[in-house]
Amino acid sequence: MIVYLNGKYVPKEEAVVSVFDHGLLYGDGVFEGIRAYHGRVFKLGEHLDRLHDGARALRLEIPYSKEEMQDIVLETLRRNNLQDAYIRLVITRGPGDLGLDPLKCPKAFVFCITASIVLYPDELYEKGMSIISVSTRRNIPTACIPRVKSLNYLNNIYAKMEANLAGMPEAIMLNNEGYVAEATGDNIFIVKNGVLITPPSYAGILEGITRNGVMDIAREKGIPVEEKLFTMFDVYTADEVFLTGTAAEVIPCINVDGRIIGSGRPGDMTRELIVAFKELTKIDGPLIYPGGSA
Ligand code: PXG
Image (cartoon, rainbow, N blue to C red; front, side, top):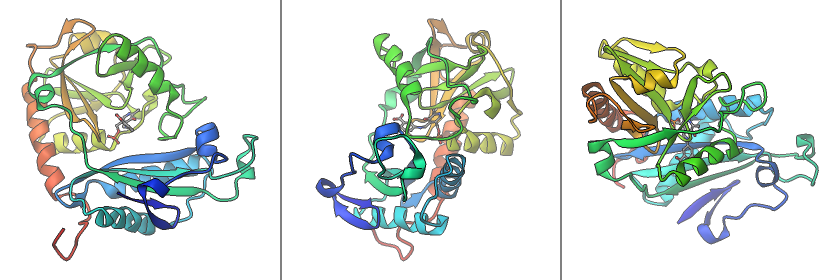
């Protein structure tokens, strides 16, 4: 396995980061989790936009343009002969001293890992999954901005630990006002009376690329889409519930906190969106091997 490491392509064993890097010492940095399907990098432009916006919010200067970042991602995939992959692109604050001052870190550090993708079992998509809500609240935007996909994931990890303890694969996090925000690594949608509803970005969420893609697909199909605040009551009484994320794609939830959702089976709109999303992954994004061949 070959890893892109700050200007070089190196074997996995040599892909190491300094113990003085503020990404490690303080979680200071941004990242993206991206997928490649059928030889194309899905929504790469959107991922690079989010990465750059997050870096801007952190006053972290990415030493490459978006075009150069795109080349790094594509070249890493080519060096690993990958067509379908999970990609982790990371920008850290870089090495500094043992104080937290980012000004002491002269240059950001960039790396890109590509791996063959481990998928959730098909059964979860066919039968739907059971999840719970947890007591850990999503970060408040005035303290740690949830819209920045930062290297500090402790908020989500606390919630994931609660899910683990309950033997559940995912957990719903509320914001500090008690409105539904998102899951630990996925966004949430509910369907009520034919309307597709998801929390707005001001609910304090990471605006998922998958979330935005699913809303686009729904609108193209003429499905009414609303971004609005809702509570766990709305989740319990929804006709359908599903989560979206780069790793999970679109995954139905049929039980939340012990309440059976709708018929207890993945709903029609969820299944329609899963199919349309799969189709989109076949055509969206830049080709890894523009001249053909893998
Ligand atoms: N919310 C949060 C908090 C996330 O971390 C999403 C939503 C979905 O966003 P995208 O752009 O992927 O549709 C994420 C996704 C994991 C994992 O192992 C998940 C994410 C990052 C790293 C790992 O589940 N982010």
